[in-house]
Length: 84
Image (spheres, helix red, strand yellow):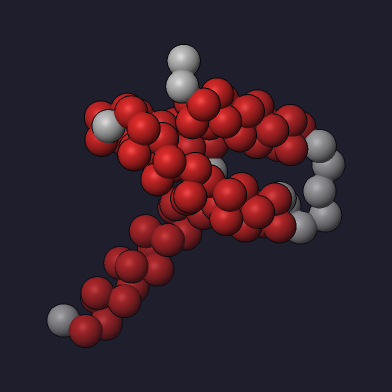
C-alpha cells in the first residue's frame, strides 16, 4: 500500500473519531480542517495511484463530509438558478 493511501486511511480514521466527539458548532470547524487537509491529500493519492483510485477516495471523503457537499450543491443550484 502506498504512502498516500495510508495517509488517506488515517484521514478517514481521524474524521470518524472527530464525528463521534461532541461539538457546539455542529462539527463545521472540523469539516473545514478536514477539507483543508483532504484536498491536497486527494491530489497526492491521484498522483501516486491514478485517477480511478483518486475518484474512489473522493467518493469516500464525500460520504464522510456529506453536509458540506450538500450545502455546496444547494449554493451552486441557487447561483445557477438566479442567472438563468
